[in-house]
Length: 406
Image (cartoon, rainbow, N blue to C red):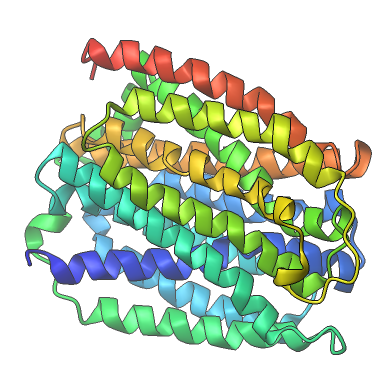
């Protein structure tokens, strides 16, 4: 199969970073217990992860093709391998900040490279949509694995036992590094732009277009919703459902699994159904879950929970919101990226990564503030506001894309 090695490398890299990036919710929970920080202080880890992503993406997106996508990804994998080892020996809240800052910098290199390479190894919009959804689906599988991986190393009678997971993650990053190192990249998959100054200015030119404005607002709103829920669901399970720590973490995997399934299924559905209807139905269904299902989960009384099987069925209902919010992010990205010439896709990817990072940081910080000041029972209700705004943005985006602005 053409470009099979490159595609496998993209899947593997994204899988590794899925575990690292989205372990932030687990580390937020552990930081409150092990390092004595409160909810608002713990939420700063999201900023340490996301702000480096935004900053680095801004400066490297336009000229990354000149560096080479392969070199950029190898650099990112090497950095996180060292950061995982440093987290094990550091064992402090400051070490966690350093870990996620390094992961953020590295992911900026990985994500811009992966998104740009998708356009070079696919030949049609449908193929682009499918590969984008599949890669994001694999990303969600990595997230789901994290919720089982960390408890596997965690022994509540030994507070530092969970840190052993970072030796495993360092080894996984090194394995991905070696696979990528020996993967042959065709020259055509890493073509540089014509002029560095022009490449850098393309990002600002794209921002001036209405399509880009509405698109980045949509991306911002979605990631604000997704990361707010993903990062704080383990804490929600502990403080609202009063589940044991390991079960709280594993319970959060249901959201990640539903996100993975939703994105993989979306890759099939969008071949037959117009994207605007897929996204509209998805966000409306998500709003209904928050409005009708969440109150029943908050009011749930659970006792003597020793395993996932002891939790009443309604307790599993809210994380299924992932099935419906899952298709939104990859479809929005694919719709815009596949409409651009390949020489502009790196610049647009930079904007995607920047506003995704900003949305993730703000979403987690707001949710952390709500958990502390409004109570964990009420915090997730506020996701209805960005969901409603997101629904409006879909129809504006549809109207603009129909005019073929870019």
